[in-house]
Length: 166
Image 1 (cartoon, rainbow, N blue to C red):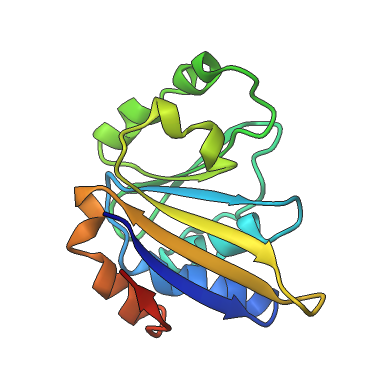
Image 2 (cartoon, one colour; image 1 turned 120 degrees about the vertical axis):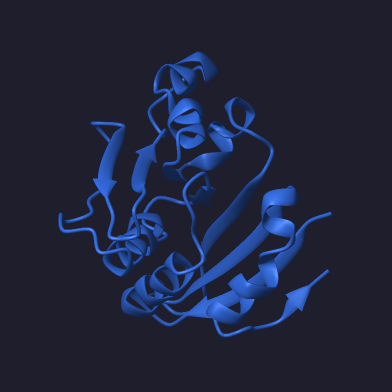
């Protein structure tokens, strides 16, 4: 059973703030799959996560490097992957994301739907869609699998508990 939370962001700073609030609920071994059109705010959201986890480096899109690895103040590594340019599932496997997650890294993967089949079916999905105003974004979070089942209420509370649908 999946749990869902829908949020509306008024602009990039609020999208980063939502990411920062989620960061406090992340653990080593977590997978967060981010999806949405180009420019929808996936990297902006991850910048908020990185800032809140004490990442010293500037968090930028790994479009051409595919994966960036950031040590965090939380004691685990934050993997920021962008699989947009990958054409085959084997290429996702070649990045060794599943192994790194098993070793305790937390992976945030842009264009996550493309990588989902190569990962454990236990993740948080974050979909960013354009809203009605130019800077508005609608974020839809879905908890998939047992790892998130007992934690989703805490995620909702951290993100200021907009409507939770079961």
